Image (cartoon, rainbow, N blue to C red; front, side, top):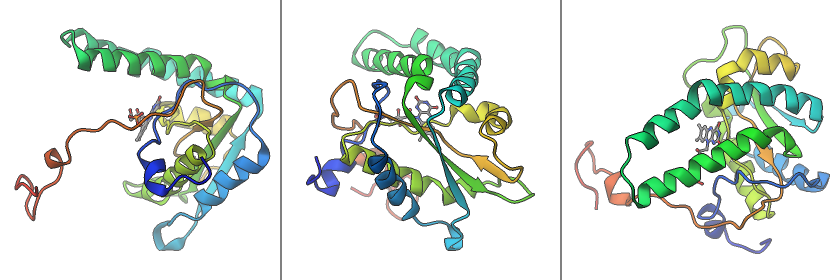
Length: 212
Ligand SMILES: Cc1cc2nc3c(=O)[nH]c(=O)nc-3n(C[C@H](O)[C@H](O)[C@H](O)COP(=O)(O)O)c2cc1C
């Protein structure tokens, strides 16, 4: 996959939630981190930090909150969506997604490496646009992981218990985690991303006016 072009990578970087517990070489993690650090941040402030978590104890402690957020929120939300959905292709697709989300929830701590992108947001705490300075780095890292044959998923659910998780990560008071990227070798194959028609989401000059 090393010679794949950017377009191939972009259109096959999917949420990979079934990952093997096998170790990931440090040099590959370093390549992912370098790609993250190459991303833009507001005013080029680079007020970020990337915590690489391999300690099983840290991962286990955070997984408890990740699962709690599923049990108390996300899982119920998915169940409600499924309950009101007629049988058919869309329902089958959502069922597969929910199964994968649940699988990652149960096995989150078994994924061998987590990259936790953080920002020093100062004493005021995060504001609306704070994440804009770290999610470009996140996407660079997801694309690079994909290019190396590694799977990952952008996850933010731990932020429902952000203070508790950030304390487990040992973050200073002004530093906040914005995602957890579980990185591992995928159990399945990468496939093409599936999105709706571009014409339904692109407008010309004013919202609602067709572009295409
Ligand atoms: C802001 C954000 C937060 C997300 N949080 C989670 C998460 O906590 N857990 C999870 O399994 N997936 C999470 N995802 C992954 C999305 O569900 C996934 O990217 C989306 O379903 C598209 O998947 P696909 O690219 O495989 O089609 C998150 C994605 C985004 C952009």
